[in-house]
Length: 218
Image 1 (spheres, rainbow, N blue to C red):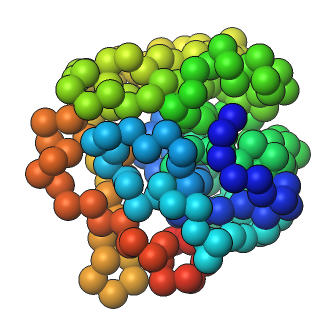
Image 2: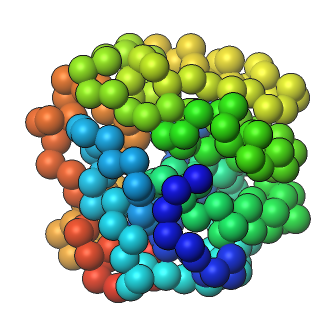
Image 3: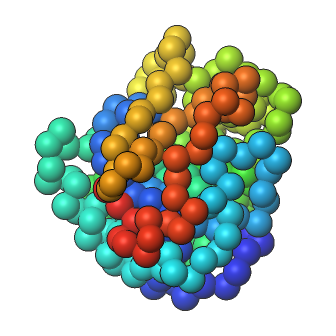
């Protein structure tokens, strides 16, 4: 995929948070990559577009933090990766996915603006590392009532049959979930996918300097 070349042992990270209830089934760890070449008009997190070197952290540090979360109540049962665009840093992403699998995290959901066919063709290992993939660019004006995506063109591809019932229940969720999380100082963090008609009325609470250079997790 397009994007800047990154050393596979480092990754640009916008945010890491636990618990997340609004991006996938169950109780999850959320990881948002920093940097996106797609830059879809109307994106709710344009602060995550720039490939800011200040947000670089070791992949092993993210894996270590994930290990800590796995030992922390309410104990995550899944991992969701979004962005930015995770596949603009494919080596780092694959390293993180392999590390998560070694820790026993079997349910991993990724969001990408690239199409699943291209991703799976380029990175066939994803079929073993991901349980599900939401693909396709966000299209402003192409509204959807589905709670798990931002525009109707986006698709969910299930890659592990053992999670079919879990994900089927999630996509049928009747009410869209949003989480408002307090961060440091007066900052607030909004996690989830708003309806397009609501997004323009929401002030994006992500910091434009990626938490002032602090470790990108809460």
